[in-house]
Length: 226
Image (tube, rainbow, N blue to C red; front, side):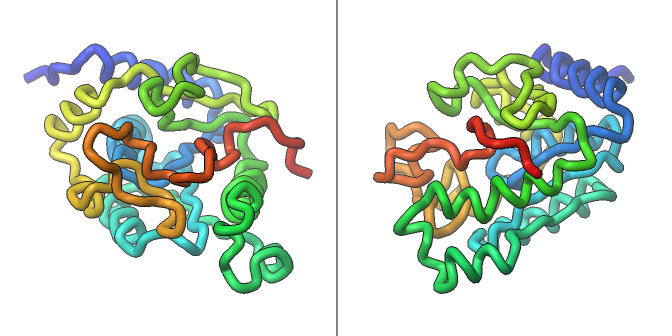
């Protein structure tokens, strides 16, 4: 019996296959293992379970996220998940007591996310992102592939997916949800900078609430990693 695919699913799989073939051994998936991450991880696993998956452990993640990561690795049989962490020397110099997030959230994200990811991506010429048009105004014009601030190609296979598309895919593939999603967390990052959303708020309203910050910095212009 032939598998029936939705249009968003077909388009995402086609883009992933093309991109993986165009960068053999030089493309990775960057995943937060957040509330919607299982969809993209599953799509990639259907093509190549050995594709490198980069996971940023900032040192301030919810324990539930770590448990969810472990569960998805087992369920999807992902064979190359690389957990990367901030440089201990950088943390000792700039965030010795772990409270930098409250004083300078941009620098905190730089130390705990941007800089470690720059290093982890050095072997690659392209990477796969789970960003979507619906997440924020700054992501509303995402293209299928883009050139990132460091010159690498960023592939956005879920860019046009709606919340309904995500929910349909989770259901059709019987994917487990992040354990905090049922507790009101719609977009999940570090526990220090993530809150539950209120009725009527957009999903990312719970990220860096009250700071005016909308991105961690990974997708913002910055110097190329040395």
